[in-house]
Structure formats: structure tokens, C-alpha cells
Amino acid sequence: MQNSTRRGSGLSLVLISLLLCSNLATALVAWLVIDRLNERYSAELNNTVPGLHEVILLAQEATNVHRAALNLPMAADDEERRLVRQRLAESRQRQAARLAQVFPDGGVEESPRLPLWEAARDYSAALDTYLALMENGDAGAAALHRTQVLRPAFDHYQVKQREESIRLNFDAMRGGAEINALVTTRKGLLLGFGVWPLLLVSLMLVTVGVLGALLWRHVRRIEMEKNPGLGGESSRF
Image 1 (tube, rainbow, N blue to C red):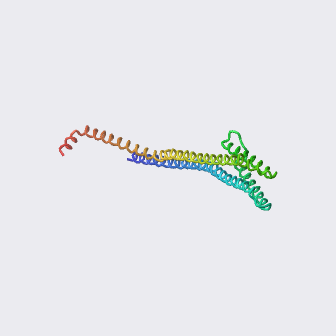
Image 2 (cartoon, rainbow, N blue to C red):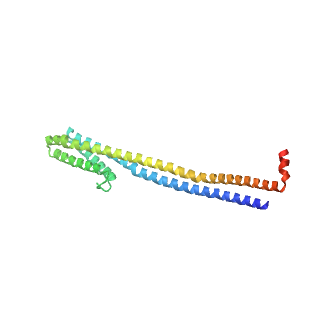
Image 3 (cartoon, one colour):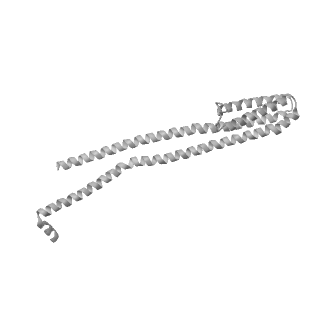
């Protein structure tokens, strides 16, 4: 009896130890998974959101520059022309600052943003030529340059801005889908870590039940062999 009690206590101790170890392992794995997902999510935000915001601000500044350039020949007098020139210079400075944020290293070869950099450079060159013509008082050549060169360059610049915004949005969606798939996989892993002790305990209980039934039958058979009449008396009752 004491041996059975000791075995039962030892089995309970083993089961409790397994459950404790399983809980600790599940907590550790959960912490690692959550930490990794947090790093991945933070990286996606740091790479996508600021870039998309900078491109949007760049588009706004480019529009302000182009609007000021088109207003230059419509100035009524020298004072208004001076104000338009000042507004244009300030807008170009803000645009240059935005370009420095979007392209901290300039136009890098094989970069997905290189077409936007080239479009910004081409528009800036076309605008410099237009302003030079305006300074020289050649209104006819300036108007022709504005129609044939400056406006197409600005349209191309806007197209590249939209393409870059679409690319960043697509990258954000793809990153979100990858994170979602990673979460689904990790949920299955955590579920496995959390359920295996229950499965083990269930298997042990079934095994103990089967062994107990076999042991009971074996003891019953021994008793019947020692007392042959026990079976007959049981059958009469």
C-alpha cells in the first residue's frame, strides 16, 4: 500500500513538473515570438510610413514650385514679380529639403526610387532654363519652353511620384500579409506547446486505466484458480 502511495506521489510530482516546464517553455516561446513580431512590425513602419509621408510632402512642394513658376509671367508689376520670385525660391528650398529626406544618398543606381530622382532632376533643369529665359526678358521663348519642356517634365515628375506612392503602399500591404502569415504560423506553434502536456496526461491516464484493467483481470484469474468454487458461486448469484 505504501509502495502504491509512493508511486502515485511520484507520478503526480512528474506530472506537475511537466506542466510547470511546459508553462515556462510556452511563456518563453510566446515572449520570443511577440518580440520578433514587434521588431518586424516596427521595421515595416519605419521603412514604409516615413517614406510614403515624405513622397506625399515632396509632391506638395513640387506642386507649389510649379504653381509659383507659372504665376511669374502673370505678375502685374515689379513688386508682385518680386514676391512671386521670393515665393518660388522658398518653395524650391523646401522641395530641395524634401528631396534630401527622400534621397539622403542621392540617386543610387539600381534603387527602386531612381526614376523619381531622375524625374526631379530633369524638372529642376527645365525650370532653371525657364527662369533664365524669364530673366533675359525673352517671353516668347519662355512661353514655348514652358509648353514644350517644362510642363511635360512636371507631368512626368508627378507620374513618378504616384508610382513611388503606389510602390510603397504595395510594399506595406505585402509586409502586412507576411506578418499576418507569420502570426498564423506562430499561433499554431504556441498552441502545440500549450496542448502537448494535456495530451501527454490523457495518454498516461488511458495507459494507467488499461494497465489497471489488465491487472484486475490477472488478479481475478489468480483468485479463481486458488478458489475454483468462487466462479461458480458468483455465477449462481
